[in-house]
Each structure stands twice: as C-alpha cells, then as structure tokens.
Length: 170
Image (cartoon, helix red, strand yellow):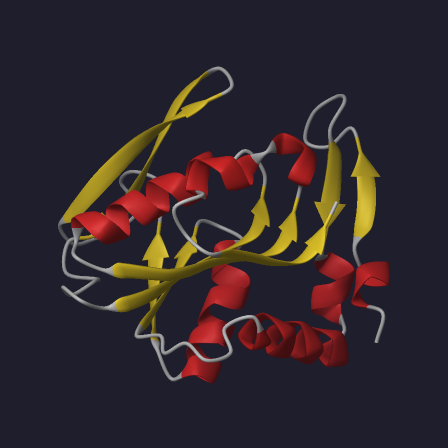
C-alpha cells in the first residue's frame, strides 16, 4: 500500500511559507491506518517497551495505538495546565520564544523502557523536551519514532543521543 500518497501537502498552513504535511487522508482510511500502525511497530522490532509517550496533540493519534500493539501503557505529554495531577515540566526554545511541556509526576517509573512518539520530527525541540522529562522520572528512552521526519530542519541533531526512526523522510 502506498501510504505516502495519503499524505498531502497543504501550502501556507498554519502560516505563510510553511508546507504542512496533512495526514488526515491516511487516518480516514482504515486499511492505511492499520498498515501505518503496523509499520511504526515494526520500527521497534527486538525492543521491549513499557510505556509509549505521545506529545500533544498529534502524538495522541498513533501513541495509544502503538501502546496497545506493544502491550504497553500510554503517557500523554501536554502543554502546561492540561494535566490534572502533579506534573513536572520542561521548557524549550522555539524560533521566537519558548514553550513548555508537562508530564504527570507518576507517569514513568524508574527503569521503564520508553518509546517517545510524535507524528512529525521537525526542529526537534518538542521531542528533546519529552526525552528530558522521561529521563527526569527515571525512564530509559528506547527509541524516538515518528511518522514523518522533515530532514531539512535537522531535528534529529537535537535528539542524537537516542535511536531515531521515521516511516517517511522529506
């Protein structure tokens, strides 16, 4: 199945000059959704995973599906103030300014083997912040995996301490 054909370019979204990789066609097709989930799981062949961490918001799409297939728990990482229990946060740099991500303090146990998942690896700031949060809680990053890597933005450099896998590279 040609999954790449179900990822369309939306020009000038969310702002002028950006070419957004839209995965909604892929998500609408149940066969494509299954193939994509299976392909993401295949990237983890030989690894045991205790928790899948998904970043807000599109990491919430495949993250729980991967967790289910891997017989692992799912842990959401969110913007500040969105998680109800006690959290820790990690602030990271954006092109103009900063942002912060939070995780529940009890979400990762010392020694948990963790997959960090998001739909797109762009500049790497979000993924790097997620990895730092997991490690602060004592988790071991097994892999960072993504549906799409935008290689021209060099995000892989920010998470070069970890194995990084993507289904599609642009």
